[in-house]
Length: 441
Image 1 (cartoon, rainbow, N blue to C red):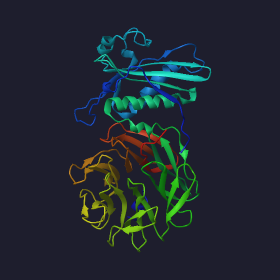
Image 2: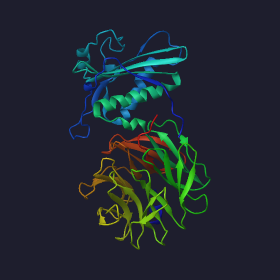
Image 3: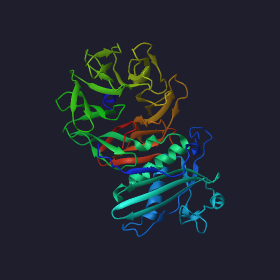
Image 4: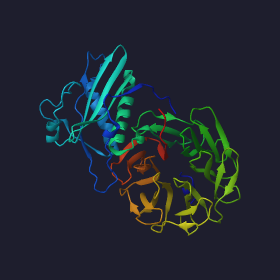
């Protein structure tokens, strides 16, 4: 169990955003993508129209639809219609004053259509993005962005967020990052990365072992455990680099759990009283409250979204299993009974569901279970170790680390186990991802 207990920013661009004229909020379409009967949105994205002479060496008329395709594909909710299916004339983009022939798009199976145009001159890039409901013949959302050419990817990401919000009611996943630990032969450090695999930033450089990053609810701080002073102490670091503070340095392990929504309290495992127990700490006052009282090891504490309950791991039954208790430590009950090694619980931001890793035939697989112990569903099945699941803030995706043979990486998938994709991989081992809340950009 001692091994199980050890598992566990960057400058943002600025550009001007305008609402496209004539867009009515009532035109937004909300569809339940979590319904078992949901089918992917069929969407067509033809080449963008170029206004004037493009001074950029790359053909942005092709780059923009390709980049938008990549973002929408990573959500797992869109069926991008191949350009090979387009009818004659559909590869070009009508200018705003031209009437779109929606019937011709319906014929090839499109239900939604993205039209775009851009102008690149004088060092400035101006783009127009428009999403249409082909069936209804309506403009769903339109946006204009202005900046420099280096910000083109940010423009695409922002409109991908607008599309997802317009169709599902939540596009926050595009405004998030994932923190994780990269292990080398002698040390480990925390990095953060965008969900498209770009903008990798090193957060710590302590020439020591660093473990278990956890985001604060506002995304401004991160807690983690570091051995830089010779003991596994708990630190809180501001992600603007202004400060790092040791908040728990008791002899033995001081391992961060999740933060409360008030941004003041942190769950942690500590040997403060001679045994690995779960505590809650007020980081402003330093006040500690012990929540578990058992001679066994209690680790990996995570709050429910409303902070009324806590899930954690204990070997009090003879093997590591997932448990639940009230926020004051009362009403402890065992949640998992299948398998003899279950750990790393993570509570969905939507409540109800908890993911964890469980040992199956010598490999760690990911599972999802209701908070009452019902509907225990296995999510991964391949011959690899899947560890440390963490939820996106919209509750629709999971990140985890995957290890197979000599390779290791951070992966993302939809919460039902579909649409698995690699986020980051290198020769060193990448472990214990932690998904940020929605961040201001």
